[in-house]
Every structure is written in C-alpha cells, then in structure tokens.
Image 1 (cartoon, rainbow, N blue to C red):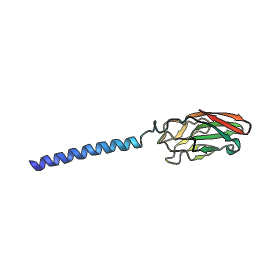
Image 2: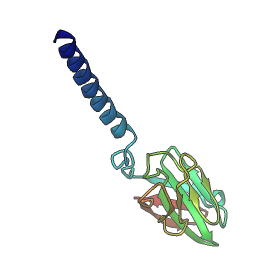
Image 3: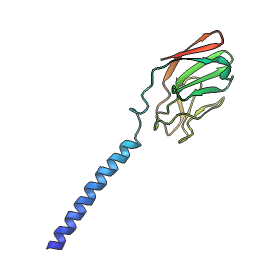
Image 4: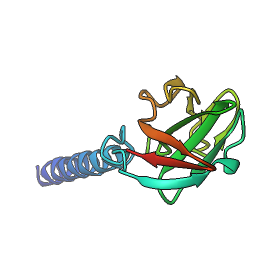
Amino acid sequence: MTSLSNEISRRSALTATTAVVGTGLLAACGGGDDATAAKKVDISVDASNVPVGGGFIDRTNSVVVTQPTKGSYKAFSSVCPHQGCQVGQVTEEAIVCTCHGSRFDPKTGDVTAGPAEKGLPAKQVAVQGAKLHVTG
C-alpha cells in the first residue's frame, strides 16, 4: 500500500508542477496585450528616411512610419500584437513582423496575415517641412 501511496503522491506532485510550469509558459508567450500596449511617442523623423512604397522603423521609440503613396505618411506602433516583437521590414504590400510572419497593411495598420489577430495601433503624423512629427 505504501508504494501505491508514494506513486499517487509523485503523480500528484508531477501533475501540479506541470500545471504551474505550463501556466507560466502560456503567460510568457500569450497574446501579448500587456506586452504590446501602445507606447506614447512625440518624435520627429526626417521625411527623406521614409521611401515611397516603403517605410522607416524606429525601434527605440517603437514606431513604424510608412509612405504608401507620394506625400501620404502613416505611422503605427512597431510592436507586433502577437508576441511583442518589433516589426522588421516594410514593403509596398506589408509591414512584416519577421519573428512569426504576421503582416500588416502599410496604409491602415490592419492585420492581413497572422498569427497576429489585431492590427498595429495608429499614431498621428504631421508634415512640418522636411520633418514628420509623430505623436500618439
């Protein structure tokens, strides 16, 4: 009977440990709402750094600025809502998170391909001569 009690105790301990560790792992790689909370910014970017049909990523301030068409600038948080990685590339078709492949529309920030389920939060852009003032 003692060996049965020991087996049940070991099994219970293993199950409890697995549940605690598993919960911690799920929290660490979860949806990332806390990790992707939009950071408030107030910065200037040289307009020359933002090519037409491309963009500029400012990782320090967690901002991506795009120019989908000549003279039309958009800005978004550069933090992917999937797991909090910084986006890594801007093309004419997409802002791309190179961590897990999520893609976002460079005009709207809307998610166009997962695993992200939410788009990139928008920032405000004001053109001031050769500078872009990004806030939000």
